[in-house]
Image 1 (tube, rainbow, N blue to C red):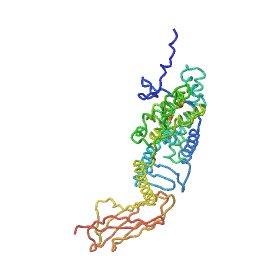
Image 2 (spheres, rainbow, N blue to C red):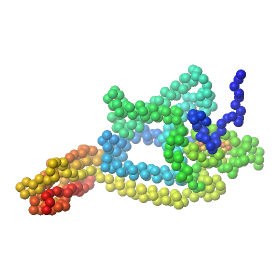
Image 3 (cartoon, rainbow, N blue to C red):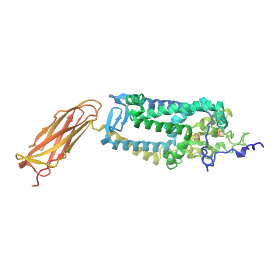
Image 4 (tube, protein in one colour):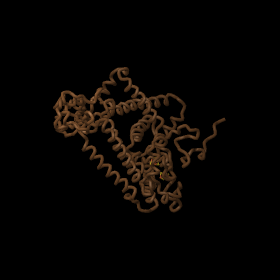
Length: 466
Ligand code: SF4
Ligand code: SF4
């Protein structure tokens, strides 16, 4: 007996109650979005090419002899376009994170998920690299769907394994690229060409990260945006009726109908192209949905249809809820003004912090010993170490000047040390204060001077209770 034929009613259509990429039994419903051409696709391709070039090339660029961007975790250094930060500057990292968060809030409140559609690495590599390779090997959406449903035969084995082989190579390349933000490229290249046993930690990281990238872009795909990404979940809190999103002009499109006799139907001819091209499998005509990643595929697809039926473009377009209702869209409104104000404050604070970032660290630390002080020939002796770190990309010459106590005698192991880039040095400092001059609360103060700046360090001088 032959299997019953699927009727139109049996074909699953996107709705507002379920995630289209998840089947009723919880399995992944693989989406094969159809190809689309148009102005937003061109804009995305150019943006993605530019971003991929930046991601890949940045670790190779040197500024002042160091990588343009490098997070050197073992040595606790962070290189950023010639500036060098160390563990003491870690607070700046939270500054940067909060700035990125603020910017994304502002972007979402004004232009919805434009970051997701154009700038997020998940989209950039899924749509700009992996999906393109899939199309190149397996063909268009219908051919890919047919291949997925066909039993394993020669054609399917060749196509699937060629695709997965290339996917794996790209995952390997991406995991190495990612690692090159943490290990200088020269060191990484050396590690790659030597035995894994010589670099077990880096090798394990590469294996795990390659597997994650491969799994994500081969199978998990849009589920990352819809289920995992917290930014996507925040959208409903950030949107308001003036937020510009990808939307469907219901007033113009409805009632939809295939045979658009003048006056009988709206402009939507219910061709389903906007759904067929959607990478998350939603029907934008059901209204703004959390699953929309703002990719604008449906805008380009519908514009082509509108051109064919000789109607004006923009049935699906970037507009606000107010705009779709024929009202004015306000870009400047209390919410966006507040975000801009906070961003301006943040930017001022950040620039001040970076500009004022010290070119060296200096700290005067008491030496650990059994006694806090000793008394010899009428003089109280305290021992310290001056910890100096050169945070610039080149050699730095220092001069250490003694400021107080005025009557003290200082013995410094080095008075004019020269430190290589990123070198740290401990300089022993002995301070002798005549007993008669000693008072409780006496401070030892040293001035550290270099061409890049001057700092004063201090530490309490201890003696017998008086
Ligand atoms: S592509 Fe445009 S015309 Fe076709 S179904 Fe979607 S909204 Fe309607
Ligand atoms: S609804 Fe349109 S903009 Fe949103 S994800 Fe689908 S195709 Fe992209």
